[in-house]
Image (tube, rainbow, N blue to C red; front, side, top):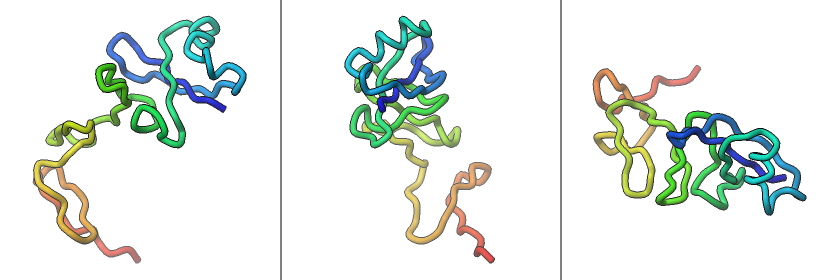
Length: 110
């Protein structure tokens, strides 16, 4: 099975559908003819376009990659289209605290 993402005029992913293997070669055209819109193939195994597209991802046409939504307002995209926190994550079990703009130790489970 092949997967195709529909993007809007701002390259935002609206939805992702599964297409039968027999339509993979012309899948974007097949999706357009059936449903309208603009379609880009994505890979569930991340073999093309960096990562599997999801709703609210963005398609970077220059790099031919899907970019995940920004996780926090303070994070910035690096040159590889990966989101980076303002400071590097320390070793250990930490989570980002946007209000403090810092990594905080995760509470113990249990």
